[in-house]
Every structure is written in structure tokens, then in C-alpha cells.
Image (cartoon, rainbow, N blue to C red; front, side, top):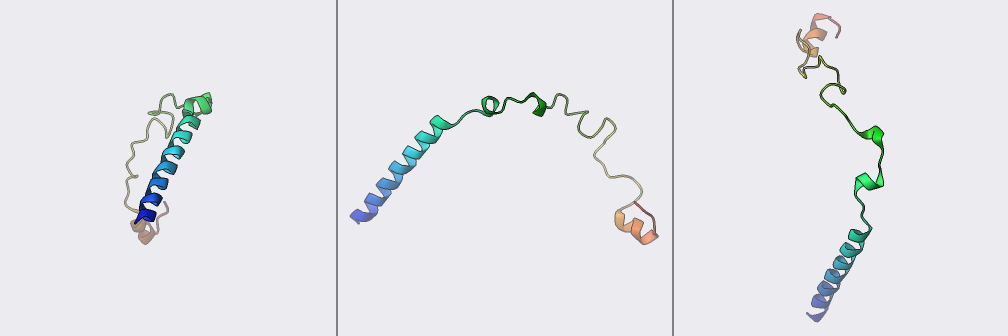
Length: 72
């Protein structure tokens, strides 16, 4: 029983020490990678185009088009 309690105590101490060390080493991403090129100015119009609705194109599904011999 003392061995189990000692191992639990050691695990708690090691976890606390690792947490303290990693907290002091961590930097916010805006300080680590200050690149202006990765920022998206207006995500509503510059990602897929102004006329994109998000809906699939009309005219049936791909399986229906293949069955009819149409090309998609």
C-alpha cells in the first residue's frame, strides 16, 4: 500500500512540474507567427466566389446522370 501511495504522489508532482514548465514556455500564436498573409479579410466573398450558394447543382444526382448517359 505505501508503494501505491508513493507512486501516486510522484505522478502528481511530475504532472504539476510539467504543467508549470510548459505554461512558462508557451507563447500565443499571434506572437509566434505574426504573418499578415494568413489573415482572411472578408471570408464571405473571397473563399468560393460571390455567387456560391452551397447547394448542389440542379439537374439530378450523379447516379441519375450516369444512368442517363449525361456527363457531369
